[in-house]
Structures are given as structure tokens and as C-alpha cells.
Figure 1: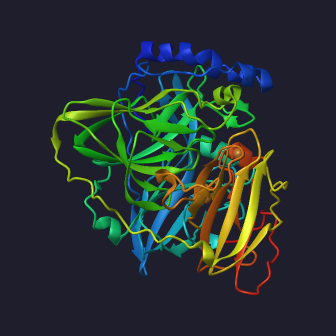
Figure 2: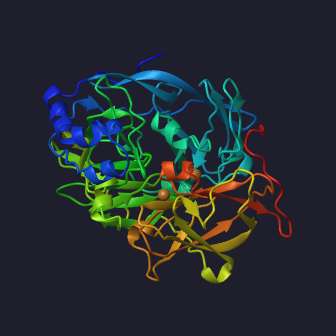
Length: 509
Ligand code: C2O
Ligand code: CU
Ligand code: CU
């Protein structure tokens, strides 16, 4: 049992002040339940209440070894204890540590193998979110790793430079396993990205920002029971596992790799007094930087942004109230009305100059609708997709390899849902018939679905086929996913039929 978090240094008064604002609504949530709680939750505002005194934890880059031209990583899922808040230590899970995991990093064209050992006392999986790879390597609910076992998927990285991530995916348990702390970044590099004048010194001017919300009890333990119909909404925001995080900025421009790794909460990130440049979305860089003042990230989504600071300044990354297209009661209950201080950026008195951002980044080939040979529709409603609840041994869709498809997706429900597809990165053709906004103009694998807005997504399925090991599509609000808002598709050779898939308790190492 190790403790790797920095010691508790949250200002006592500041923390109590936050407690007073958030306490009734959030911290005592287990005592309240159901609709009465839903109706009672008030929006919280933590601006000025957080004493940012804990140095931001930077997840280490994972070590690797080389074997027969393959880069081999080792990850071990384990239980531990972490001092996150002043009140006491929490039981947490991590990979190669007690909370979260190292940052994996590999280059386009590189072959990787990852030995994932499960030292927990229950089965789990590890899924490579956003990765194009064989279904058997995907780490979804069909690749369970029993306690004591090691699972060793391998594949060749072949997609653009991007900020991907990894997390468990055991059916019905994903929310709990992610909430306890399993997850980390998987950064992909390529020559196009390397040729651009962008901040890219990891931990210096290129910073992982893994944002999660938690609820702690009076003794500092993680609460897992304060669940509403949309999952758990916590009042304490962690970045890379650090509460009240401060990062000392040493360069004029800093690249933040934002990941919403929360189970249910969405964030609208921004700064009080400045815009920032968005340079990348889920699956890679944009064609050109987009100047924004807010970026909405729902669970599972990423964005790379670049922010500029003056010497000596202090600037807070904040999450602002967001319009998720919900009623005012549901806006409060989902946390969408909250204003949250997330991370303090503290610039040193001398900053290293950074080059101007390139006016153009990468060429993003637009997928062409006239190439699509199949259109599928997916309605998300009542924790089901097209009226069906996830069944491990049912294949919902059969896709032919080397084809382009249009998926029309909408949320026919008054609840917040998003939509994530495994194996591919897609492009947004239209949003209710209109062109997508800049932040949805690049490669995406997860997209927010406001109620009653129709999204047309285009994607191409290449390379890997397996008639009997499915990929998933699902809502990435993890409680919804666990409740069955997920479907399965296989990618097959032309003319091939779907095989039969197991219930998930078989081993397919
Ligand atoms: Cu991030 Cu199916 O998952
Ligand atoms: Cu995924
Ligand atoms: Cu949902």
C-alpha cells in the first residue's frame, strides 16, 4: 500500500468554505436519494474558494522495453491508498501506483504490446479509447482479465498524432472502476505533428490535464453511492489526481491536453479573461487553430488547447455553466450549472519565449458522403439504444471492412447522453443539417448529443476484421453505459457473416 499523492495542503478554511457551499448539496448525498435529491441539488460555485497549493501531479511517461521490433509496456492494476483531501486517505485504484496510471506514448508506425496484469481482487479490463486496433485487442467487456492474470494485446499504431486514453470497460462495472482511479493518457506522435512549432515538452509546456469529480466523506474516503439517474456528480475536482492543483508555467505558451475522465459530469473549460487556441480534438490535430473562449467536454472527450500567459500572471482554468439542452432542474442535478475552479496556472517571472502558433496545422482528409454505402440510425433513450439494452452475446450491427458509413445519431430523451464509437475516428457531417462548429470539425470518437438534435457522423472501417469479437458503441456517461446503453458491432470481410459472441466470461487471450 503506497501513498503517492502530495500531502494534504488544502487550506483548512478554504476547504471548509467549499464544504459550506457544496456540503449540503453534494457531500451528504448518500443520505438523500432519488428524485427529491435530484430536485434539491443546487448549482455550486467554487470560484475563489479553492486554495491552489498542491503541485499538479504529472503522470510519469510509462517505461517500455524493445522486443523483436515491438515496444512493450507493463501495466499493473492495483489497489492502494491516496491522500487526496485533508480529511484523510481514500482507498483508490491505479496502474503501477495507487491512483490513475502512467502516460503511454507511441509513434505512428510503431508496434506495441501491453502486458496488463490484474492485481485487484476482481476482474477488470483495459480499453484503449480512441484507438484503431483489432477487436480482440480493444479491451472491451469481452477481454476480461481475471485477478492474477496478465492480458497482452498487441497492435501496430496507425493513426494521426492524438491524445487518447485508457480505462477499464467491464460490463456493468465501468463507472465504479474508473471512479476508483483506473485510467491514464495514451499519446500518439507522428511526423506531421513533430514538424509543427507547437509546445511539446511533456510536463513542461505540454501538460496532461485529466479532470475528474469526486465526492469525499468526512474522513476523506471516496463516496460511491451518491448516484442520481445520470450517475455520480462530485463537488471536488481533481486534475491528474491532485485536489487544489497548481502548475508553475515556465513558457509563454502552454499546451493543455484536456481529458474529461469524469463518469458523468461535463465541463465547459475556459478562462475568465482570455481566449485560447484549440489545436486538437479526440482523434488528432485540427486543420488550423480555432480561437475559442469555452470548450465543452463531456465524459470521454479530449481537446488540446494552447494558452498564453504573461510573466508573473496567475490564471485559473475554470469550468463554466453550460447549455446541455436540459431543463433547469436537470441542469442543476447534472452539475451543468456549476462554476468550478479547476487548475491554477502560475507563471514564473521569466518565461521562455514560444514560437507563434502555426496558422495551419495538418491536412484533415474529409470523408465523402457519396462514398458511404450504409446509413444506420441510433436513437439514445431510456438507457437503451434503438430500444435495446446491451446484451453481451448479441451482435447489433455488422459492418463490412473497407467501407464508409453514415451513422445518424440522436438523443430522444430529456437526459444528457453522448455517443462513443470504438475502433474508428469519425467526422461530423452535420448537426441538424448545419455544418459542425470548429470544435467538432476534426476527428472525433465521442460527441455530446443534446436532446432532439440530429448528428450525422461519417466513418470508415479499415484493416481489422473479426466476425466473433465485437467493438462497442455507447453513451460515455458511465452509469448509462453500465445500465445497458451500449451496442456491439463486428467488422467482417465482404460477404462474411457475424459469428457468435460469448457472454463475456470466456477467456480470449
Ligand atoms: Cu472510453 Cu467504450 O469507452
Ligand atoms: Cu472507447
Ligand atoms: Cu447517457
